[in-house]
Image (cartoon, rainbow, N blue to C red; front, side):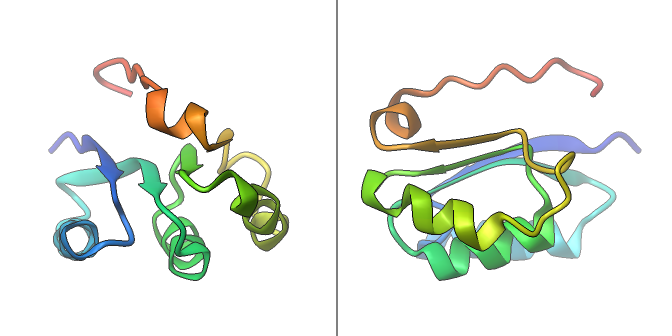
Length: 99
């Protein structure tokens, strides 16, 4: 079975956490590629460690450095992009089929 790449916007909110619960229960069906959150850095860090997305974005630019510091111990290959503020709100991610 091919995993469907999943982009979760609002990952730390109610719907986002419920979505990630479904993803966690169906690891053969889904793969988290991107997580976008508003300002809950603590929960976002936990989600990044659990789901290992390639892209992480936080809406509140003042939290980008805190997020970078919290994620500094992660394997370098697991996280490709960390965005903040306007970048996170306007980012368009293209993820080719089959990857």
